[in-house]
Length: 270
Image (cartoon, helix red, strand yellow):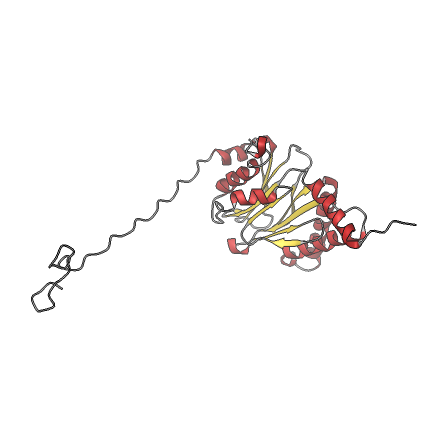
């Protein structure tokens, strides 16, 4: 006779299992900026990519178990290619891919004994900042969009977002957004919960370039990455000076130390 466990307990155990294993991996940050959508993650491997291209203006990033999110990425590429070939390339959207990933992960979480230990991001770059779309899909099929243009994945995603949200500006240049993302990744994992140093060889960086037509995805490596990090930060904009209140014609009212008591008669000081 099999032991009985309530559905609530089974779902709770699966969610705890997936969260615990995802937290063991390295975090990733996705930011919307003036040049496009930036992907930054820690990855010591040069062969196993955590950031990849899905279609012309759509990118993919993931954290967790590599073989599982790589299967999801390949399925997304096949789906995008099939829809683009059967209908039109403009019919392939990030929202449709995010919904398909949500259905797949939700079915796996419910029906299979072991859920996928992954969190994935589907991002689509638009022709304008307002048209950018960022979606995060978790192990249980939950999908959430991020109109603010700031997204983090991993076990300490909330701490990273809280560190960079206030300083993020959607119209900032690519170099500024890159430094902000690295600051967020460096803010967790140090001794005593403090900051640490993330070196350039540990980074995997890519961008969906808004200015390109056709395929917009490109990786930033080597000298290009070092050049972005070496660019000086833009100077802070000075605060506008407050104008001094204008004095009425003729100066302050006469008649006392505070100007009170002026006459209302003709020839007096108004």
